[in-house]
Image (cartoon, rainbow, N blue to C red; front, side, top):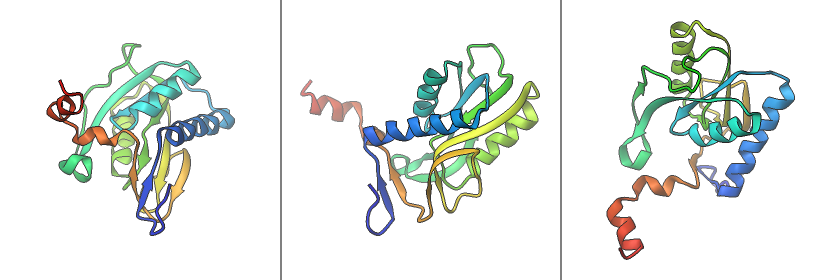
Length: 174
């Protein structure tokens, strides 16, 4: 649900999963066949996992991180992993790169550039996100929702960003 001022978007688990299914439909309806899904951890892991199951293709993972401060609300230095975890030994062929959103576009563009320069076995690369903010400099090949007002997206699992083992013990009275 988008707030009236357009500054916050609150997403329930049901809405989140429906959006991932709509993303799957966009990819499917394009007719493009791919060999592997490469998700960006952490935001792309949930959509990547679901798309991997729907399309029955292997899931590879590349870790990136830039939103670490203030329980994941402040963007900092972008770190991109040097290695990709994949069940096929080495990532190759046609790859669908999946993340949750194109926020500023910096992460997706940096990863696309890295994949194109450092992974010549990738013969074709396309990108898929759930949301694209209006301020993003990157446009994915597949996106479900364009957000021209650039709201902060409150995803259903982000409460875990500030949950500690101690808070969990208090919650469950352990």
